Length: 177
Image (cartoon, rainbow, N blue to C red; front, side, top):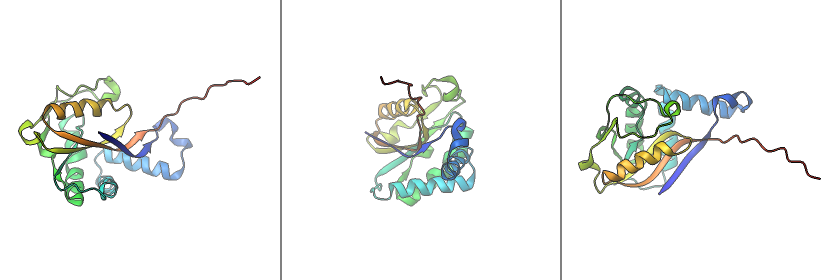
């Protein structure tokens, strides 16, 4: 199964060193996560341009759910509808329900979504699915949700991320003699 990120995500602690275009993209991405309309349009256009070469007529697009129902609706309801309309795909938003609230993954470090996500197994059984998420850091959340979708009978073909966290590893100070 293919996993693809459209751009790199620069963490906040490195933003002061980033160039203007990177700062602009990160502002849009963080505003998308907040559910701001202009950023939702920006993200939907970006995803639609990326997916344009693909025939998605028999594919269901599902956004990997946020930590609570309110955040999930704010972030993905309009976005999912827009992307599906532009790509001629099927919108699976209404067939994934977020119940209650779980601690945010970057805080809890737990990627198990069984406790607060309900999947309409009758709807997804045997169907081709493309998943979308905003930011991928370790892929653990995506992998957990992919597993849930597969248990529901979905044929998950691809996971598309708006951004993948850029790695800033320190280089070692080796001295050559």
